[in-house]
Length: 489
Image (cartoon, helix red, strand yellow):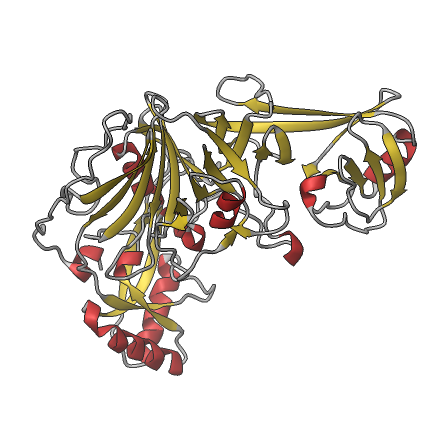
């Protein structure tokens, strides 16, 4: 059964435009799009405007109407809510045997620039208006009690056709009026997670949004570790995933590109060994570099470590597992990499760490000066003014990431060099549905971005202005995250 048969369509609802707050005459302001909203019934959104400071404006945007209801989704043997046709038909038969009527729904997961569309199938039971969520939950429980695992689902979360609604916060920074700078922050350490507002407060930021994805599948003490490149004030604190999208910040300029990084340890005797990672747990036979920002002791895994001072001089060669002294770095080797350290990193020798970040669009090196920060993104959205969602290359080509709607944090650069930061709240049925990956790209193009990237989202999505969270995080409160993008005075 098609989604259209599930929810139907209704006439567009009229929307009222709230008049904008006037901007002080001497302050330069980036224009907000006058075009119709690109999603749903494409009305003119209601918006309010607030001048934050010269060159920075905050817009609160709302549009759409809640017309989606609830259904019951039957879970496949894998635990997912979708599968191949044969699996779905077998599940539908189980539902029928339990005395319920099932529909097998074909769904097309949209194509990305680097990944073809995917045909999947879902098994759905019933349809209830929004006000009757409890009835959908009762039906799901009845099926589960009969041995068929199921759950009540809000249709607005599917990622298919919807009328919304949407609630967004949009921050526009125009370099003609803004005289501050952009920076990244990992907070007090690489491993520790902090809220966006706490990182903003620590540096007296004008505004901030949460940054890239972080590793929730590592040691609990390290779950703020970025999943991809992180550079803070010219210091690489996490290596790049080759070819993955990132946001490069320098002074008050920003650009979106794809990056790769190399780190090589070069001993005084001329012997070289690739450094496999920065500030993360090693696997067998890896050489990992730890900086003082790591925040915890290095792993005691039986390997070897060379402690380097600021000049690269080896001040200690030790067994693995210790603190990173202030002003120092530690080369940690496991297995064969540890043997290399015992042979080529003697005390009082010099070991040079050659770090390079390469812009894959230009082939040029990104020079890591103190005014440079880099935040790794999840998916590229817009390139050269065209929607180009690079979900597979960026590691997020699942149905959940491309098709499903979630809260989103988005960053884009305009043709004139301005920066756009947007949060799309979601997971609030009847209030705001969020966006899928294709919709996120459409939103950033509508806002005027010619280059755009998706940052971490879901419960991590947060925008802070003047020390206050101005969006409504889906967890009900602000989540601690790995890093943040700061707008500094």
